[in-house]
Length: 373
Image 1: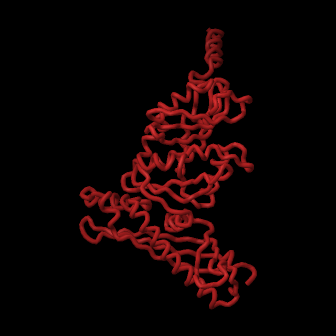
Image 2: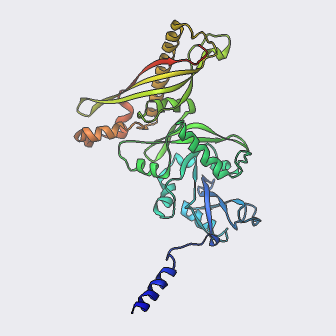
Image 3: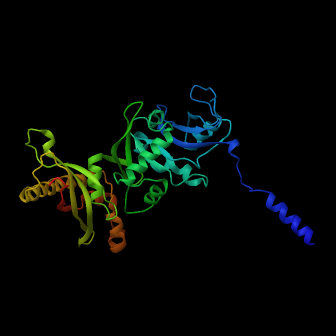
């Protein structure tokens, strides 16, 4: 009996996993782009490593050489099935780092494009998502000397921007949570394939629930994040403080944010009538000021006043942009739903949000200005 039990245990241990898939039998997707064709079809372009043909139909010579292939279909899954017919092994997105969406598709319905990934247990929810101006697949054809593999280049670009807090985190998981979180919206990085060697951050694509409804540039993105939660703190930004200096560079100052405190106050004025105010306090370090003269205390005070005034104006402009896009980025609706649920049930937040008074007050204090002075 003991020998029989041991034999059965050995057989079970040697059987392997029921759902195992050998690398030699599959093709891994490392990045992908989705575009819309003139025939209103979905074109999926992927970067894969394996025995896959390139776009001309020729087989890649090395099993480790990346291939870029495309296929069209009625839906993202249909185009993926057509891609499977072009490669020697089944495609899996478990190693996907980046998903790029063309601006045209993002303006329609983002969930319909991502549904195939959310339903598959083999898809990685940590993959980053970005919107691309023009054709998204163009970004996959960029050749960089810095990082030969385009998937690594795009993935590292987005992660690097997140680390310095130049953009909000935008992963599959974050987007799914935001899509089903009634009372708040989200924003995705907006990229631009400048040429065959460079992809640059254009700014942010703003979303009204499931579709792109507006955008802002990279500088405005930093102002948006300055008004975000305390834990989000852009490390450095450049700001114009004067307009009259003959030497252009003397009109600007670059600062590091040393400390930040932010408070969002939502006030109920009457039934179904609310206003929201954001107060931001910043402690700043001057890291570049070409005009100099900061050894004079009055000049530091004057510079701080210019910074405060300009930030106030630019922050107000950012709030106007997100309201025009009907993008409740700061989750004001979520706050009302949590604390004033009866009002929330009787409100049409899609119609109410763009009209509520949304204000900001900036309070800056320059405490460091380098070792020169």
